Image (cartoon, rainbow, N blue to C red):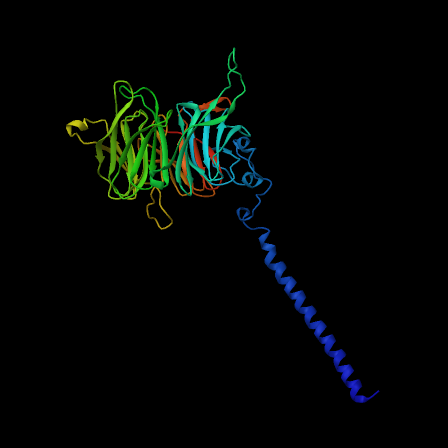
Length: 437
C-alpha cells in the first residue's frame, strides 16, 4: 500500500476515535447536568405543581363540588364557595333570581338564556330550562317579571338592542283542568332597536308596592348613552323615559318597593327620580326627586337597602357612602350621608382600587363587592372586611346578586350570593358570619 495512503487512512481512524471519545464525554456531562437540575425540582414547593400531592385533604364542603371538572377539583376552594352552575358555552353576562329564589336565570353570550332550578344549593347538578333567542342576537341581561314563569331578556345584535318577554304556559284541555306538561316559553312581547341602537348596560326589575302601586313588576333598561327607559313587565308598555344628562351611564336600578329610580353615571353625583303612581295603580309619571352630592369622582355602582330608604354608592374616589333618602325632598330637604367608609381593597403598590359591582344582602347586613375577579364581603355596620376571595373566578366578574330568600343547602336554609363571569361559570357563595360589635 502506498505509504502516503496508509498514513491518511491511519489519521482518519485516529481522528474518528478522538471525535467519538470527545462527544461521548460531552453527552455524559450534559446528562449529568440535566439530572442535577431536575433532581431538586422533585422536592420543590408542591404549590408549583399542576397536581396537588395525594395526601392533601379536602375541606368539609367538597361534596358540593363533586360535579366540577377535574381541573376545578384540583384547585383549592374558598370556604364560602358552595357550588358551580355548569353548562354555559361562553361568557355569562347577567343573572337574576326569581322572587321565590328557587330559580336562577342566566344570560350567556352563546345565545342562550338558562333558568336553573335551585332545589338544593349543594346538588351535584342542576336542571335548567333552555331558551334560545332569535337568530342574530345574544342575551346580555335578564330580569324576572312577576314570577318565575315569565322573564324579560335584553338582547344585543348588529342592528341594536331588543327586549323580549318569555312566559311559560300550560296547555288547556277543552273540558278539563290544565295538563301537567309544560310548553316551551313563548315570546309575549318584544321591542327592537331600543335606546337608539345603543347597548344596554343593566336591566333590573322591582315589584311596585309603594303607595297606590298595583304590585306589577317595573323593569328599567339603562343604555350606555344617557337614557333610561321604564317598562311594564307583564305588558311591555313603556312607562317613562329619563335622561341622566351626564355624558355616559354606568348603571341604573329601581328601589325594592318600586318608588325610586337611581343612576350612576360619568360624574360624581347620583340622580334619583320618583316613580309616581295613579290611584288605579298605574305609573303616572317619573319625576326628578333628588341628587346625592358628596363623592369627588365618578360613582361606579350603587344599590338600595331592602327597605328602599337608603342608597349605598361606591366611587372611584376610594370611598363607599351610605345615604338616607327617606327625606321630604318636596320641601327641599336634602338626602343625608349616614356613613362613609374607605374601600378596603388595594393593589400591590398600595393604591386603593374601586368596586365594579355592589349587592346588599336581604337583611341589609352584608355588602358584596367585586373588582375584576376579586369578590369581597363587607360589614354594613362597620365597613370592615368579612372575607375576600381574590380569585373568585378565572376572569372578571360580570354580575352579582343575593337570593331574595333562603334556599335549601342540605338540611339547612341559607341565603346565597350568585356571581357570573367571563370564565363561563356561575358560582353560588355562602354568606360570611357577621359578628355584632
